[in-house]
Length: 113
Length: 114
Image 1 (cartoon, rainbow over the protein chains, first blue to last red):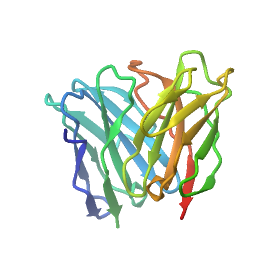
Image 2 (spheres, one colour):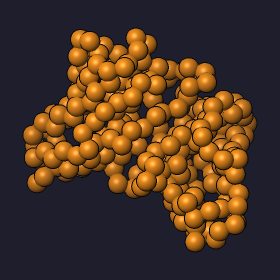
Image 3 (cartoon, helix red, strand yellow):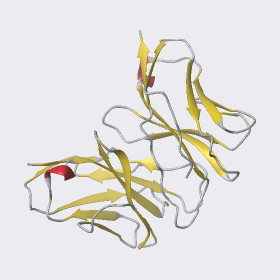
Image 4 (spheres, one colour):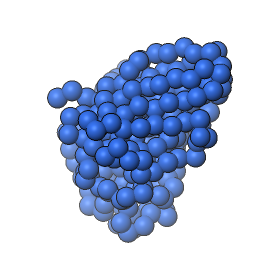
């Protein structure tokens, strides 16, 4: 079956712009989580959605937001981009109840110039 | 979630068993030990998880000490494709509403030497 699909794979934006990243989870997975990965901070949890509701949020400013649609697809948005937002953004999906952890996509590499 | 401690890096010869240790001395009774790995420029990949019994799957074995304060991931016959960063994570298994996240540490960078 298809894995977690993230689009686009690469993105270059200018400071002050905003960006929207997309994630399509594995079919049947209803939970979608987002992570940011940078060389300095490693992998950090952004937020998690289930049935279109945000259930958990990491310690990121309000410029980072997300949403989930009725088909479980999710988007995350970053407004007023800063140079420090340059990172690999990873999406992970999981079943509602699963002991087998999360399946990650390959990520979107965002570069802010 | 309990904190984990792993060595920063390790080398292993191709074809040998790679043993990756992890300390989780503050683990609580309902927390599982999960292992993920991340190959360069890809998303993390689930490997294995366990509570207190040793576990084995097609990828690896997980040995958890009796006091559960440490564990070892074993890749029985390492190949060059096993070169990656390996993360040991402890968390409650399944759904724990309000805690659906993975807390990644810095992991162990495993390099398989030809």
